[in-house]
Amino acid sequence: MTKRRNTPEKHVALPPQVAHDEMMRDLTRLLAQQEFGSLEEMTAFLQNEVTGKPLPRVLGTTDRERAEDLVVAAGRERSLPKVRAQVAKALTLDADCIAAHLLLAEVAESPAKALAHCRDAIAAGDRVLADDLSDPNAPIWYIPKGRPYLRARQFHAEILWQTGERPAALAEARTILRLNAGDNQGIRYILLEWLMRAGSVADIDALLAAYDERTAAWTFTTALHRFRTLGPTAEATKALRTAIKANTHVAPMLLGTAPMPDELPDSYSMGHPSEAAIYVSGSISTWIDAVGACEWLAQVSRPSPGGRAGSTRRLR
Image (cartoon, rainbow, N blue to C red):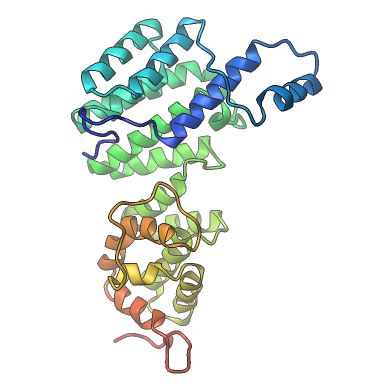
């Protein structure tokens, strides 16, 4: 099982999304300490006291808030025993601290234990967010406690997939998309790759049609899906040319004529090598498994003597 954290001997830096959650937590607490008579007063406060300035650390005053602070501190510890000790303290203050259960899942020794802690986090979230979850229009991602809840569900889905429980993983991914329709987590990319491995043609068609985007993940997967269902037809080749135009770095990395980076980037820019590396790392096996797909990719991506990409004739 791939751990989400470094080994105990190394310092654990908080991931960017967790640091952002800290900022949102401090802002929420800071605003709760104020007494605004109107929206205009709150806007003026934000402009004068917050914008362009470092947020003050606002320590928790309730047991639930103190538990959250302990989890943040645990995330900065250098050893797993200290991480677990801090989390244990947090759970004595708030047994439904979602972030605490999620952190235990991330440092668990086995997939089985990680699954158990993920389910504890999800159950805690179901209780804490009960009113919000009952509202189909509630912006769960923008509720501070909603973020660790949605991350716990994503980690749960990833472990289910890794352990071979693929239908359950697909169902969990769809649940996350329903709860976070804006897909701030990028779960649609994970779901699309999973469907390419274990989903039906109709499922893949539906997900591809649900989002209009020009990312490498969407354009190259669309092309590969067309190839798998139609063969190297004009329609499939047109989709592949669109993908190649969107990111010229993907085909060389997929074909092994350009090197992959030693480490995957934490973020990417569309059309850049960073996006290509992230896409290829997750999708190369799907291309290899599709008989003839890499040969087709090589043919179409190779410029012809006239300067155009390869022809659309069927491969033999």
